Image 1 (tube, rainbow, N blue to C red):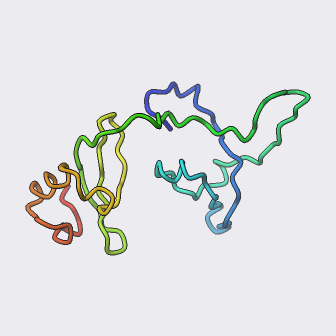
Image 2: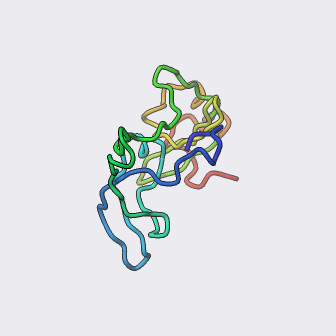
Image 3: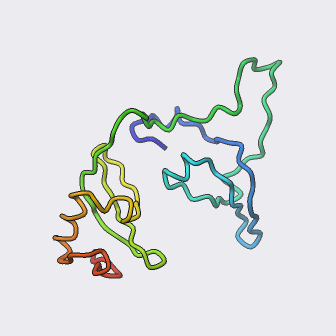
Length: 142
């Protein structure tokens, strides 16, 4: 959830989301999450203790409440975020993801192909002692 928000004001449950797959051996479910949650890196599989059955809205008790209104993730669509630095990398299925720290303090994993033109990537390569993403070590040093 967005940084800088009071925890007590953040909703405990959001949804509803369609169950895509059940995992009875681990008591978990995989959900079909909205694109904004996927983009923020929210993993789609949740333990049953973190889920609740959807209760439809009762218009008689709560008029004008839109149960389909999604929570504001705090991202201003007009604001452009800048990369502060690349803080790490990892190999996933033969490709590289870079751990990007944004100027607002958040960090996310982005595919190299999506941020290859950034000067922060060139600086990260220089610090790693490589000239190309294929030369990055398979296990980055801690």
